[in-house]
Length: 125
Image 1 (tube, rainbow, N blue to C red):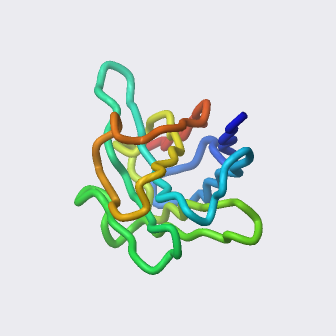
Image 2 (image 1 turned 120 degrees about the horizontal axis):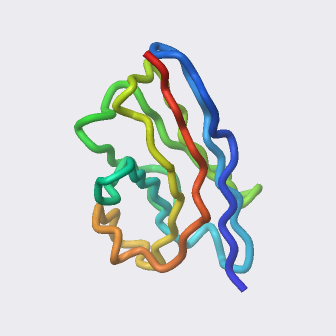
C-alpha cells in the first residue's frame, strides 16, 4: 500500500520560511517523479513544483520561482519543499504527489498516481 505523508506545515508571518517534507512508502521511490501541489479555499488545486527521479531536474510554477526549492533524498524515501519569502497568497493546503512516469515532470494533477493527505500552510500578513 502506497503512503505519502506530509509534514512541516504551520503558521508563519509573511517573509518567513517553512520546510515541508513528504515521506513515501510502499513504492520504489527512486523511480518516481515527485510533485507538490496546493489548494487554497475556493480555488482549484495548482501545481507548485516537481523533481525528477534522480533529483537532477526540477520545475516550478512561476508564482514560486526564486522563492521555493525542491529536493529529495532517495535513501530516505523523502522529498522536500523549502519555502522562503512566504506571502499571504501562499496560504493553502499543500499536497505531495507521486507520478510513476519518470520521463516527465508534469504540472497536471490528474497525471499523478498517489497523493498525500495534505498539510496546511498559513502565511499571515
